[in-house]
Image (cartoon, rainbow, N blue to C red; front, side):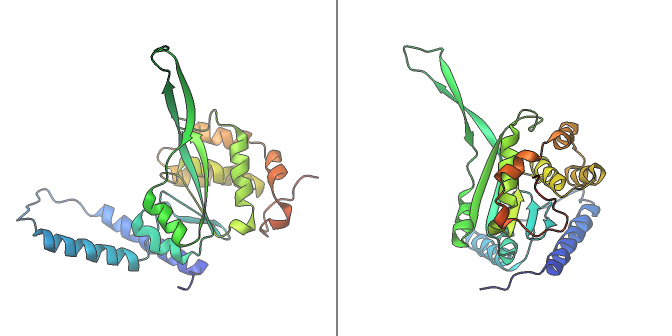
Length: 251
């Protein structure tokens, strides 16, 4: 079994990756690109094989990756090239705050204009599910109806259920992610910060740091109005994490 990364190792890797991305963006693109020829298919296969080997060996964190609290991490949607890095975290669970899609069911010939709709969860990619299964990682999914402002109409009980899963040490270490690691993840983490008694200034600063340049005022309003009392009704007190800033459940 490979050795898990320490918190210091994770910070160093993320800092190096951010520095590389910043340097890459600073380099201007060439005005003209000349392609001589494509390599033969056999050579192309060799290159693809080498690329996969690099992915397996390199420790590349997903975009927007960061440590939230002890054994809790956040990121954008992980891809295959990120699996080696995630494996080093020793994850026990992945919590996906996914989109939720409307599925329209049309009636038969006798009722051509009649239709019904139901919410379905987005399907998790096969390669991601395979990675979770191979590494004995639990998959937790909480769906949110797709919307320009996704948290306007979402029931708070979904956020409460997700937070109860986060506050269960048996699920740690845990990775929380959505698509970009910005809005859905940002709202969930913002509500978690309320449980940790962070000030609103600190909560919103963190939210905007990850959602920039497309921060949503409705997301921040949702965080501000979120009632944390219902979370404590779902939390297993026996398995709560020992975070110094985590407030005590109401009596």
